[in-house]
Every structure is written in structure tokens, then in C-alpha cells.
Image (cartoon, one colour):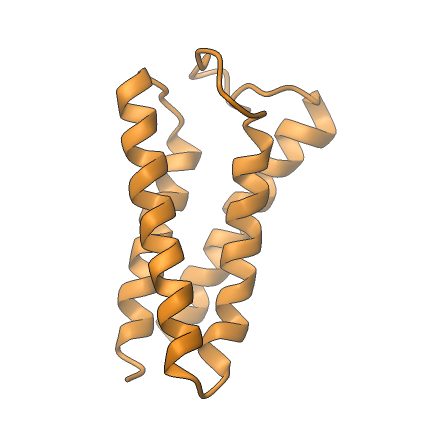
Length: 117
């Protein structure tokens, strides 16, 4: 359980950093570290950081309630989001290490939450 909390906290921090640098500092749809210049995305990229922040934050609730259905829903949404966004970023040639860290933390959080049951 401690590992899960650390992973979720790291995910919240990573997503918060991306949201802060995208939206507050630059108000730009581009990667905050200037390592990537994404092609035209269908939505502003800070929305992905916001969704990640909401998902990691909801992980604390999903793992604290005693409902396997809630936990499974959270896990499926996380795996689908991580796989979908990672695949999409590879397909369009979008390189963002902070995004890849968030994907990794999401998958590891799901794996760590599985040990609860």
C-alpha cells in the first residue's frame, strides 16, 4: 500500500508540473521542456495533464473505498488512457518525457493496486 501511495503522489506531482507549465506559465499547448513540438493535436495538450491529475488524484479514493467495482473502473480507465496516449504519441512522433513518466506511473499504480485484492 505504501508503494501505491508513493506512485500516486509521484503521478500527481508529475501531472501537476505538466499542467502548471503548460497552462499557468506558458498558456501553450506545447511540451514544457522544449524537447518536443507536437503536431496539431485535436485538443490542447494541457487537457491531457489535467485528466492525468484527476486520474491520479481519484486513485486515492478508488483504493480507499471497499468496492472492487470502483477499483476496477479506475484501473481500466488508467490502463486505457496510458496505452491510448502512449500509442498516439508514438504514432505522431510526439516526444515528451514527462508524459511517458506519467504513463509509466499510471501502469505501475494499477499493478500496485491489484495487490490490494
